[in-house]
Length: 288
DNA sequence: TCAGACCCTCACAG
DNA sequence: ACTGTGAGGGTCT
Image (cartoon, rainbow, N blue to C red):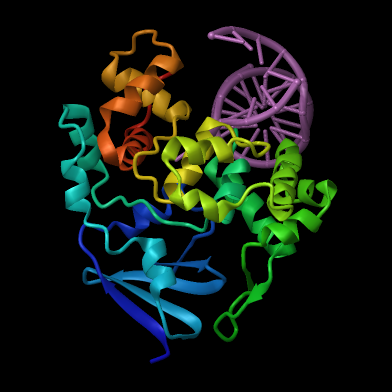
């Protein structure tokens, strides 16, 4: 039956922390809830008595697109038992209880993270908002609501010029986003094909795209494809690993990367998100 | 493996 | 109120 609302029972789900954690960039806090666009649909989310309550602007018959995005069927408790049991990890879990990994559309995730390099979250959000407003299709919103836009397809982005992308405040990332969109448009890389690949193979494919190095590839693999063991290493994680596991000794990034690959287990990506968020909550010790 | 460049914006000094 | 400076969930050469 078509409807404009749905509810999902969840456990250990901190919607606020998850939507604000810097893995997705299109969510705005509005009147105690969140508004965003998922899979071309405007949606408002709000927690209520242990359930995620969703409202849309157009009738929905099948809510899988949102269940997938929110990953409501993931049993977090089970994930947490696979984390290493050291004190730092436990502290991070305790400090960020209910933090989740979302499952975004690969292309949106890819383009967003190409825009993320040496940017703060708030700036990334601004870039994405401009990109969507300029190149994305309008989507249905509740009567009287401000307009909303879908994330533009790679075809739409490929047709844009570099100058137009720079007007979205992308700076030196503009040619990367454009180049990536064009490669996808020409079929040089098939994003769907990555789903069946091993992590290392999928990563290799993504890193062929301009502006996509190891870190951004791992973000896309984790947040867009659900490779749970992908462990994006950025400056925050570098600091966290040094501070929490190497007593702030001088350790080269390559060594920390190798440590992370083996230490955090098959849900390493979740562990990474907890460490990342933990560092942001408690505040990092200076430098490293 | 190692810098430096890259675009642009904000925070924070002075 | 201004201008100067540094760094921000990296990548490329």
